[in-house]
Image 1: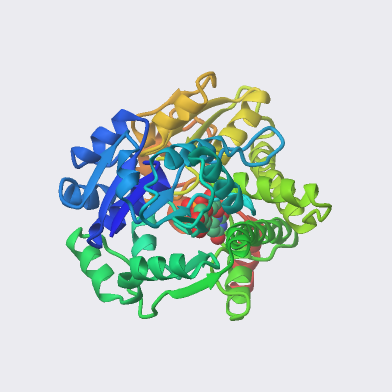
Image 2 (image 1 turned 45 degrees about the vertical axis):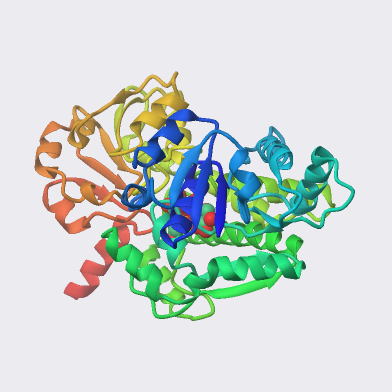
Length: 469
Ligand code: UDX
């Protein structure tokens, strides 16, 4: 098939590279010539594990990129994977989707059938909106030669290549039988594990083995659009919940890690997304919960649970500031080192990251801040150009004269830092590990005051005592 992906960001470039790897002639369209050139030169326009290897292998063969829309004329399937940033009121801004619709309309071939797929996360009703725009801009009297459908992405950053080849589910939203059969054919190779695993092995990406095939789920467009928002909001609620439980665990001297583990043993709850953290953030959850809430308010059905999860998440960010202050007495004049700026490891994405919120709160209380991230410093600096903080090339440098080191993102390399040397460099040896990621014994043995989240020192002391007794 001939596939076009509009947008060379996280969604479009991963989707495009994947369909190219599955043998479809795929063109990625983007207005940014740097991204277009990167793909055509066999490099990745973004940092995402496995993506560069995939693009290198298929660029110039089944994969190409361009900033022109002419390729739409020959396409069987056109994916729209452009950004949908938040407006002031939290609702999604559809200006890039609308621009893509207009460009598609101007290049559609009236003599062939084309499926246009909303892959970006878009509000319920957007497929109909895009249909209307395409009809309007192409001056057509009927819509028989195209169909706009919803096929939301469920890609986790950092694991997007694995997720695109080995998804849990493929959701197709359309009642149009012709579009359904085109999409079924397009996805047919993912409904057999052999080809995806072959591709992943060829590019040398180590993935969790999977025995189960994805569930291929067909529904109408509005339900498919809703599934995406309802899923992301549910995950956000789940994390906010365990984070609140973790705060209570500290007060009641329970161990949130054991509590999460015990809860997750109930198959109705499941053990995923119960990891305590300084809160959820990133390019999806904040934007998607904001749009979901804005839509619910607009229709007089405010989602109270989601609203509470958003508020609770902000409280979790603030809790990190409070906890550090409690330990140091004051933040005024203190030097705080941060390990990790991205919202999770294996990404360079620092959009909407909790690091910026926590750092700004601490700066507001008079702290001096020095930071490190293996991939995210460039984007963080670009997004927050006016923050008066020091960027450290070496992770260990965040400890220099510091009164606290706060681990925000659980990058694997942070386990292997020279913690002895860091301890020697610190003014006061306090480590706050917001992901409960480091070995508490290892760090304590080096003379640090170590604290995790939800696992208070008091608890551990009690347990040691009871073991002795
Ligand atoms: C998410 C969805 O998972 C994906 O399906 C969707 O398509 C895009 O949004 P992503 O934004 O890449 O993916 O991040 P995800 O892995 O879901 O994590 C979101 C945030 O929650 C991160 O900050 C992460 O560190 C945090 N998190 C996750 C926790 O704090 N605890 C957990 O148990 C899980």
